Length: 259
Ligand SMILES: Nc1ncnc2c1ncn2[C@@H]1O[C@H](COP(=O)(O)OP(=O)(O)OP(=O)(O)O)[C@@H](O)[C@H]1O
Image (cartoon, rainbow, N blue to C red; front, side):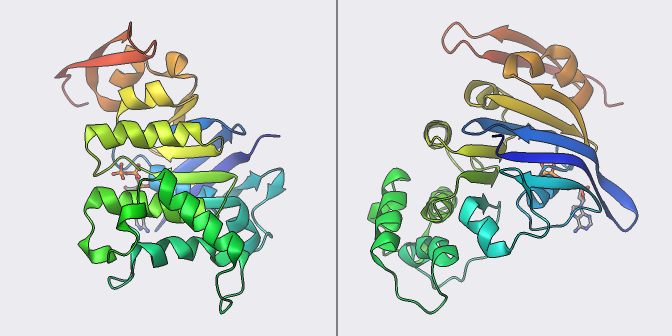
């Protein structure tokens, strides 16, 4: 069954339409990349998909069940979100941050049980954060915070994970490691990304937002084309298949004049 489906999503602020009739399908176990220029509506859409923001119109369904009417706790057992600048109390350790991911699975005041500890250890390990577990949040670099947030989301043991630019703050090595990790989890992943070439290489499907509307959707080969890049980013580009990765790869030329 398709994991996450959004149909006809509209969302406005102060009379300005931010999301306009957005349709999206995230197939089970695949990585769906959400692309688009600054202000296109990616973060707004991800928050709607995660159930953090009710749309004005349209439906989001998780595993065939509409999010509206499903309790937060039930949604949180199935879906985790990693936001761009999460508010985390500055005194909290990495261990405590990751343990927050267990909240949907236990009582608020219950002690951590064996399953909780197993999930936390595993999440720290796969994100390479075990050595940082006793560090205070405020001492972490941007990239380490990014990985600790992913660890928190994985400790939640969701089937679907929604991420807002998870490679932001990461150097190229960690960008590659993060995307390799995400695509190897076997989870349904919906992730906003800015780097078109990394998106083309690591995502199974792409959705491109422009001014709150979906302007392209499909496989990287279908979506990453010179006309699309020109339409959405106002940039001339040459798109070729990389002989090294097999993925469509864009070389960006001098920006075309802004329309
Ligand atoms: N709560 C809000 N109040 C007013 N405007 C908002 C609100 N949330 C989003 N917007 C506006 O909606 C538009 C889309 O914002 P959003 O953050 O979803 O875009 P984005 O594609 O994630 O951008 P970026 O790539 O810069 O992170 C922007 O113009 C933003 O200013």
